[in-house]
Image 1 (tube, rainbow, N blue to C red):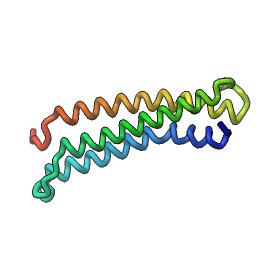
Image 2: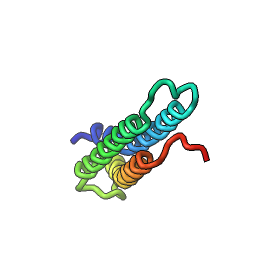
Image 3: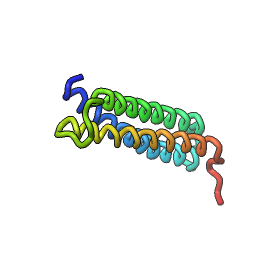
Image 4: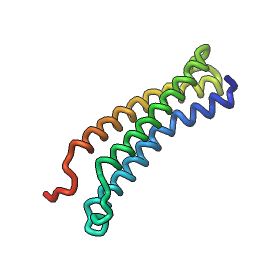
Length: 124
């Protein structure tokens, strides 16, 4: 693989999982507001369907970002993260992206399980 392609995959792997989680979190909050508020209650929004779809898509994107980071790690297998730039920097960020995307994937799965098992629109 060329350095350009590795750099692109490195940055995609580093930011895609975090962006997917953030987007799912904000859009999920909006779905909850739309279902639970008086103005949105007549729209007939299914909280579980929307949240499940949002979080499943975000988890898939985090998984793809993790695979991009692993592809960079495979592409830079001859280098160390302490090597000279740009190869050392690319490998360092790919290691960070692989760990971060695994954590984002687990957080998204836990968020999915918690969201789908909780009662929505309950005052208390």
